[in-house]
Length: 226
Length: 85
Image 1: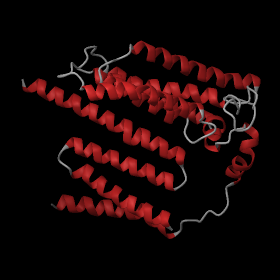
Image 2: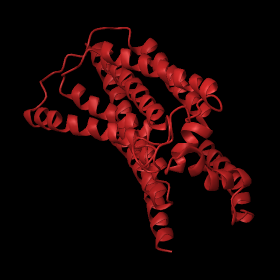
Image 3: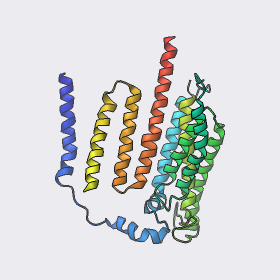
Image 4: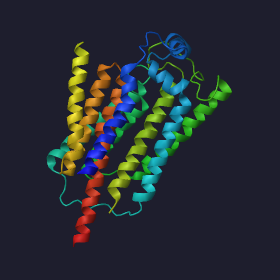
């Protein structure tokens, strides 16, 4: 009892310490910082992407995105190493119901198409490689639910393919444009069309494929454990 | 103003779901409660005009994380059944 009360008091004190300064003197930002101001005013002219978030994620802060993809890769590799050793799949106690089978096979192409749409239009609409990749992974999850697995080698190949070309395109930026992961290795095109903003659609599509296949790898490893 | 009211309502439901996730005895329900927190968080991001973050939160937080937790629960249950036999 005393332990519980003490931990409650500790939590409340800690929360007060963290949140009280925020409540008392939160500065009201009425103007952008110089860097944010540059992104907001020059970003569209510089990179030709209407969705400024994508321009920042893929190009201005492209190295961070490469780091995020690497972190995800390491996490997948760890899960695969720890959980994917046993090759035997869990044998389902009963086959998937007819409703699930038909529903999943009907929805699967639509979900995958939607995922591809999200990362192809990352420079035009909200969303991009990460969101599209997760949507694709949830489509593949449907297929796992009805026990109709594709060969996992396809995903392994796609993962290494997209990772390799992501870094290759990034390195091309050093030679052909301003620096690593510069998107201006391709012409910027007409502002607001799908084939515009230089290499951003290409890079984001590769990121989408990489994230999607990595998440499928996680699901595969967790499901394949005996 | 209306935005603030919505955010306060969603935030209170999130708090309730967070307490449920910790204190519910049934593990599956507690995983679902954790998923609800992410879903409501993504709605709040949408209200705060951050659709990119909202999409990520909805897809990863409430979709994939829930599935991974459920798969882990399934693995644990299978192991327990194996040791019981």
